[in-house]
Length: 199
Image (cartoon, rainbow, N blue to C red; front, side, top):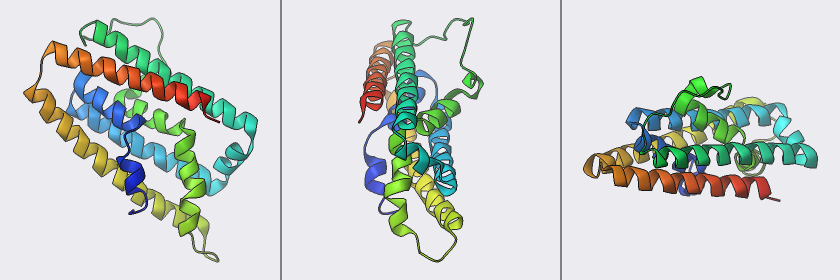
């Protein structure tokens, strides 16, 4: 848990998503995004336990596909967030099409932003193995470490959700919400481009 704290405190995609959800929606939306992000880590832990993460990271083509999917998804989230700011952060009009997991809302955004993040996968291939004990079953050890990691991330994101909710209550103006949503949208697009272009 001590080892993952510095990684958790560095602002990233989950941090930005939680901020955006609280500003554009509510505290409960931010909490759902936080839980989704934590569940995304558990998905990576499961992949690592069965060897899928190692297979993807060792295959240049598979890794490229994951990076592109993750990058496109984050860019889509960023553009959507920016457009919502232009509408004054009002409910979006009914779309003719939507992503298959759109019904999951903020939870789905948090989940998929982590599942499609190669850097989250790399944690379970570089950091986690240093804490495994040889000669003991691997899966239970990875599960224990993943739960600890998810707990740290969840506590931090829920704390940040409360901070942003208080700030929104104190400065709840259309200008503040538009500005914050635009900033969150730009950051998500930047993260998406960085993810897709990462070597």
